[in-house]
Length: 465
Ligand SMILES: Nc1nc2c(ncn2[C@@H]2O[C@H](COP(=O)(O)OP(=O)(O)OP(=O)(O)O)[C@@H](O)[C@H]2O)c(=O)[nH]1
Ligand SMILES: [Mg+2]
Image (cartoon, rainbow, N blue to C red; front, side):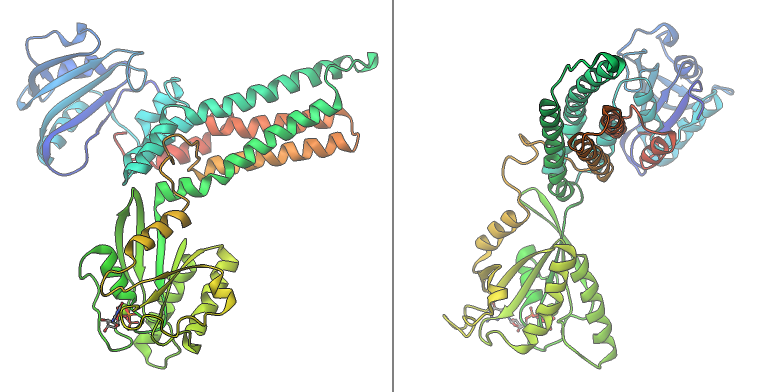
């Protein structure tokens, strides 16, 4: 990537809209904008943060393409930290392409995905975690995930990481002085205090790592799979949750054969709900395929909703399904919510004789047909996804797997430092471990990130950002 070239791209989404924005960034941004601008203002001398109305023209033929507003941001007071011109034109697909072509002809180069944000990072306008938050913010689909990415964008993660690093750098400084004067045997920090401080940082890191799951739920949503033997009311529950007749409901067992997916925003968290074919052993080819797909979604679920029929009580067929559920709990630590369905038919039912291992989980009595128990169901969902009202607003959370890995590596390095201290090894070893922890933490904010990591992150952006 050549940082000296002026780059351009359409920064608004593809398709037609009221207006579209073509962005230019780089040291020739104003010169290039001047070539495609015809208006009263002398664009080249325009002050920062000013907008200028004019005709957008082909730089060679001067043929008019559209009318638009050129907004000028001068370095370093722009998104990228370079000279930036944002051209707002009419939002037709064809017109927008024409204006982009004009800026290319006038000397700009097409921007790579995320290149504007990468430049902002390289020019110190954002740290790496903030740059990543920009991508998350764009992709946010619920209010909660928006708040979480905003939290990161405003530098909360950066501040947290820097505070931890500062503590470690202080310790490292003391250790290094001691090492320099090792013959004189001075002790600036007692072993006990050293151990205590390192332990405290490690604990803090581990505590932050645990928030990842919440963060992931906020960012990617919760995958929730509805399972149960045929005819217990899985599709009825899906319809109830969505408030529409999304799935076919019928008294014939084996009605649902394929997996049905629907997105639902429940209290600010996005759920990807999957209704599946009833799980049972079957020789029928198509149904068997459906059962296979259902098993797949069961394994992939963050949250499994297991339904049984209250009238029939717990049957062997339920036990068959439950075995798969237990496997998922064991292997993936999936959370489980149990629905005792059709309570409108009998008040008590046989559903009281649930095995102990099943009863350990939350059981919600419901009537998917009548809508009874929906409130309890929602409350249980909230509890299970551990989403409380404060989440994303006051609580610090981490939502990016790259950050989690770096923190885990840093915490491991500190654990190794503790071990070195306890076994009385030379402080040299402790210092090496602390330095390693610092490097891992630096990766999060981009201070020690190798070039390929940067490329990976920015290539995941869309062009124009
Ligand atoms: N009375 C009563 N009937 C229900 C309730 N929930 C579902 N049913 C009925 O039970 C039958 C099966 O419902 P579905 O929602 O199709 O069940 P399913 O689990 O999706 O069934 P398959 O797709 O065949 O596995 C239908 O006749 C529903 O009307 C309920 O809460 N009360
Ligand atoms: Mg069904």
